[in-house]
Length: 329
Image (tube, rainbow, N blue to C red; front, top):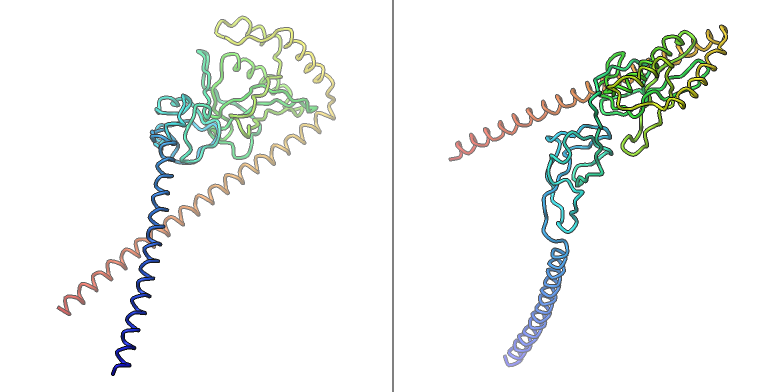
């Protein structure tokens, strides 16, 4: 009996010492966690103080593309540290209305003034439908293009530079041109009509990054009669350097005077085939886009049907469960 008591006492003492040790270690662990937590809070508070107050700025709701027109419904508010804000940030939608995106912008990116570009319109600017033999496959509203004329022997000149596409139709592209640009375009049309049977062509060439790339210099030169009209037209604000125009025009005239009948026939045939290939590629591109849109619509309808079916199954399960509960009760 006495041995049993000794054993019990020893067991109790060992248990107390073990539990006491565990309790001590646990308290030490809790104290360390508390210190680490308090240190982390101090670091976070210091970081918040460094960042400063968050203020509202604007971003976009969906991915944009260069040349896309800014619309108020496309903008959304995001918060940015006040310490980072400067005068270039967009704080009100009115700052960017009637402008165009210079670059592609992802949702959540704070907007700044240097992400936008403006189209300078003078009093002579008018809506104009451009005629061209071809344009870049996939051309769309908001893209920027040069209008180029290519003469039979391949000498190419920029007629219109950095023109924003307002709409793409079956055989024309809608844009805005100033009075001077319309005169130059009309002059290029005359050249084109006179030389198209010899292989001349008009082409629209798209900029890849219109907000970043420098606009091309206009290199085309008009005939003397068009130059005279531009010079005397009181509505034209942009005048042409007469001597430089005449020098370039002489080069164009000399080149056209050397075309032989055989060359003209071969060049015309080759250009027609090239333009036919481009037209075919454009039609194929449109067909692919239509097929993709149709596939997306079918996928959307499929998802809607599945969602409706899942909703019906859920409702049926809930109804069955209520019936079973009623039977049990």
